[in-house]
Length: 559
Image (cartoon, rainbow, N blue to C red):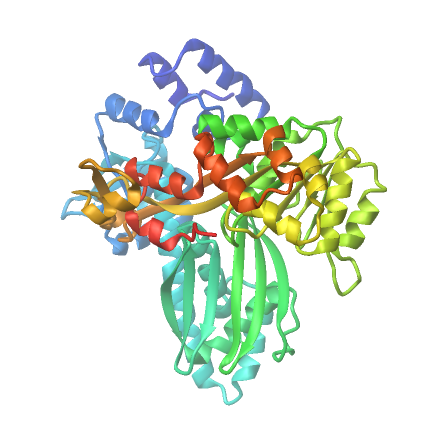
């Protein structure tokens, strides 16, 4: 019988209600989930509130592990498995005491078993469990990587024929194989750091491993060149590629689980003069959990978007460069539209995420399955909503328009710099203006810009040039990046989307149909005052202190 010690304490000290306690008990009987995790899954109490409760009940200090100094030598004191299970991590030690960060102080009895490894008195601090796991993951990945490199180098030196060692290591599917430990550590660290891509780049004397974090490439480590053959071969095996073929580009795919979150790995190789360059794209399944309301639209723009999605026919476009978050937005739209009464069919190149309830088709040019071919077939499948991964050519554009006019809602992406310029792009593809006016429901243009770290951003008085750029004529304080332990000294923490939403009203449709130039339509929209451009969006974010002037320079917002 489950006793729910955390929840009973929270109830006793009035941190949760009786109703919340009963809800947890009811769910607890149905699910084999730890009480700590259940509290979070049911949103009964936030992490910060739970830490405050533990701090108050047990008279413990709260510690922020993003800022705390950790003696990494102490991480060898206890088994990794035990530390993860209990949610603890040693911080510092003195002659008689060992300071432990714990996520759940109620596990006193379980922690006492760790005295097998030390006789020192435990001094507890309260910490966020996610922070504890993150620090353990990072340490594990770094130590695994260093040890694997050393072992792999030793093996290479000892063998007269290093290719035999390479093949033995990559085919030995055990965690002790140095090559496997090295590749796993590179991937796990990238996921922990929140990277979107991993770059493995061979040069004359070394191999650079770089992660793309918040849109910027950062060198994580440089490996000795003699480990590269084993490394690239292992990655190619993971992706299901031909390890004997080194002269042509290849692509591969693998799905993995880490910390109960699925991640799709997309492998891409291309030959260079020192071997093969490899890029691994990391697509996290939890990126699909965002609803339309969570994307970051302001109230007015959100209203426009929902009005577009309420239509049963027409075309809705999401535009922006590669890596601007178009797929996340598009899938959020589809999630909003999903129901048992609608048939949703997608054609993608490639299928980025597999989603239950969507009929997904992947383009294969080699097999003759192009976007136009797939779309023609899909229209005979009785769809209600069609998602096209990208409108790339005239034929796809024409089919999409015809589909929208014949009673289908069509969602797609287009590579343009602004929402308004999308209309010009479709006209240039040969779509007649009267058809475009009749079919286009709206366009969402977006960019991802870096968010200033809230813990270290520096306030300063804007210069005259900066005020001119922002369009203000009064003294204003802005913020710039500084760098701290929380943001890995970058000055930024994560990214957020800025939007430009064009809702094609009857007035805009009339302007299109009458042959008015797109540039003049854009001017009229701005003059009207209810149309916010990307430039205006990023300036607003700067004035709010969410990002820096650096972002307006680096984000391409001009058409």
